[in-house]
Length: 137
Image (cartoon, rainbow, N blue to C red):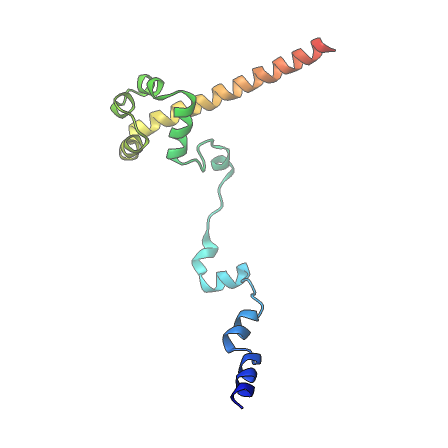
């Protein structure tokens, strides 16, 4: 008889199985807003903020892109910061730039200049491609 009782227990679904088999329903934004009213008050970015090339770009990303494009030596000459000139590392540079607003502004200016240079290079490259295509025809 024990075998029969064991078989019934095995066939019978456990309560935890029933819960795991139930459909999961994701909460809608309205339901989330009801629970956290502060969530509704998020301010949308303005057109001016969205058009700013620094919008949404972290300082670490700016510095990584500058080092990749120019290198530490150029940054040391251009910005004249010790952490760029002597044994430069990302960690020491980011720490200094976060603590020093004037240095961060200089680095952001160099980044904006780099974006302008890239835009100009892109225009010249596209012009060269068009010229080469015209000569090939």
